[in-house]
Every structure is written in C-alpha cells, then in structure tokens.
Length: 382
Image 1 (tube, rainbow, N blue to C red):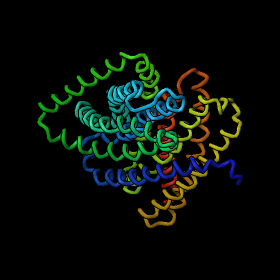
Image 2: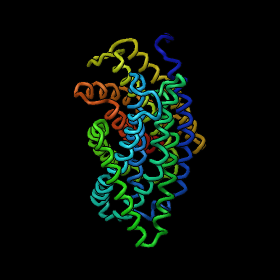
Image 3: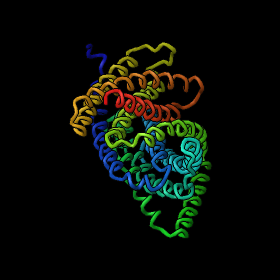
Image 4: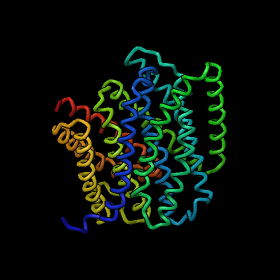
C-alpha cells in the first residue's frame, strides 16, 4: 500500500489513546458484569446506561472537538481563555438538562415494551448524582487535554475522544453503581432533598450558559441533537436490557466504544481539515487529505478489531469468538466511515458546526450498529 495514503502519525497517536480507552472500557465491562444485581433491583436503570455512556462522548467529545478547531484556528491560547470556560459550563449544562428528558423517554419506552412503570424520581436522582461526579472530573479534564496536547504538538483530534472515553466510560459505570447504592441507602426524605439540590444546580448552570452568545449557540445546536441521539440510544439500551448475557455485557462496552472512538477521530479530523481549507465538502469526496484519512482510519480499524477479537477469546476461550468480533468490527466500522463523512458534509451545507452535531450522532450510531451487529452475530455463531 502506498505509504502516502497512510498517516502514520495519526495512527500512532490514535492507537495509544485507543488502547488506553480499550483497557478502561474492559474494566467498565467487568464492573458492569459484577454489578448486575444493582441494575436488576432498579427497573430501567440498565436501559438508560448506554445513553449515559454515549453522552460522555456526545458532550465531552464534542467539547474537545470544538476546542481543537479553535486551537487550530488560533482562537485559543491557554486553558484560562474565556472560550474554554464557556465550553466547560456549556458541557455541564447539556449533560444535566438532557438527562431530564432522557429519563422521561426511557420511562415511556420501558412501559411500552415491558408494561412496567419505572421509578422515575429515584432514577433521576441517581443519574443527576452520577452527572455531578463525572462532569466535575471530565469537563476540566477535556479542556486541559485539548489545550495541553496541542501545546505539546499532538493533534487533539487524534487523541482527545479516545482518552476522554478511557477516563469517562469507567467513571460513568463506577459512579452509576456508586450513586445507585448511595441513593438507595438514603432515607426517602434525604433522597428528595438531594433531588432538589440537583434541580437547583441545573437551573443555575443553565442560566449561566445562556449569558454568553457562544454558550447559547453551543447549547442551541447541541441540545436537539443530543435529545435525538439519546432517543436512538434507547435502542441500544433495549438491546442490552433484552440480552443480559454475561459474555456480551463484558464485551459490548469496549467493542462499541472503540468503534465510536474511531468514528469520532475521523469526524473530528474532517471537521478541522474543512475549517482549514484542506478538504472541500463535496457529494463525491476527493483529495489527498480525505483519502489518506479514510485509509488510515480503516487500517486503525483492522488493528483495533484484531485486538478486541483477542479480548473476546480471552473472555470465552473460544476461537469462534475471534471471528465473530473481527467480522462485526469490520462491518460496523465500514458503515461508520461512510456515515462520518456525509454527516460532516450535510452539517456544513446546513451551516451547522460539525463539532456540535457530528460526533454525538457518530457515537450513537456506533453504539446501535456495534451492539446490533455483535448481538446478531453472537446468535449466528453460538
């Protein structure tokens, strides 16, 4: 293969970040597997978990992509810049406000599919408690990672989303379990008090976001997208809820997050290249930068699919698992590469910032396509 069609720097930087994310996601899968009793005790909690995991990429991955574009354009110089602070506040506001609607949607889907009413206030308190802990860590970490990696001559587009995934996925699962145990332990009166505290905090951070023109734009462009992709993410949650198979719950978090990370790296790079004028958005894409990114992404997919397939064998000691995971990875990644470009193209034509719209959709589709492909092939192979 022509070496000019492969960006070795992109593969090298992204590979290290993807490996760290894979390790963290594997621990998240193990923790999820060991905490099934907690999710069985609260109907609907497992269904909303994929949406929360996806929100980690949707909110904080998009935050990194926005900051990366501004760093490339010279609009940001340090972590203390005003635009960095606005991005942090906007991300927290989005994480909290979207959760209210997502829990109502989860309640509706759960009732329609299982004719069971879930404890909405209990789950809302658990989810908001989880958000407080995770957003307190992930929003400043995402800002620091973007700026410092750029200052060290690393491209934030290559490493940002995978690394935030490495930290975020484990934190979301850990604090979800921790928050569930904590809230269940509290007396009813203190549960309502805690919920009231989170509602007040949501209003405060929401009003602070709307004070700035940029914060208002980020919120306006991101909110509807997050609600729509969150609704689709319930498809993934339904798949998880209906297939509580130990092997799948161990493997699905690292598998689908690896897919989402690869798709997010590509979409973030495409967005930056379009802003810089290296790629002209066309229906039929062309140009050295585009094809080099696509080929490099596919090579990265082959490498990571092989590693995740090996992880499947480690969990099951079954050679068939290697073929199953590898085939699922290739099918899903090929679809995501195509979707990533055309979503970026469409968002540009609609005069929307791709950093706000594309990554949330890509990570959601990665979850749905990844989970659907993996579960379907599991029943075919086993």
